[in-house]
Length: 127
Image 1 (cartoon, rainbow, N blue to C red):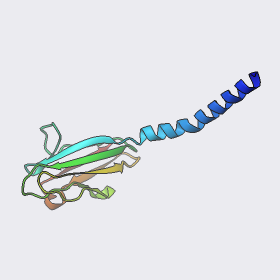
Image 2 (tube, rainbow, N blue to C red):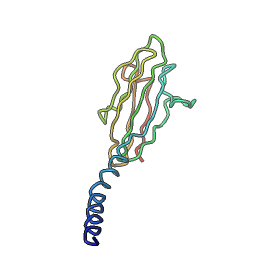
Image 3 (cartoon, rainbow, N blue to C red):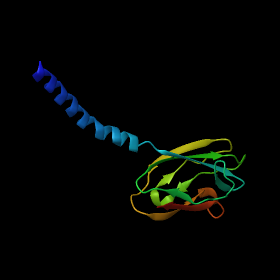
């Protein structure tokens, strides 16, 4: 009986050792949610009054960025060209999300609305 208990305990520990890294990876892969609103020819972090804010990201994190277009009759999108990240072009009252992995090194990138890149843009700071 004692040998059977030890065998079961060893099997349980072996299974845990195999599963724990998978669980840690799954937890790490949950994206951080960021919602931007396009309105009045600027981007805003939802609920904040600062236009075209600096978006702070952590190296290596996974992000889900959602863009909501609140400008009726105006097309907007969101793009970080250097990272190959972008949403489709949206009409007023539409939204779209993009999930991406932040590069592992600290850096700064420019984000823009491609149709209005001279007016609508800001910086992404990976730090």
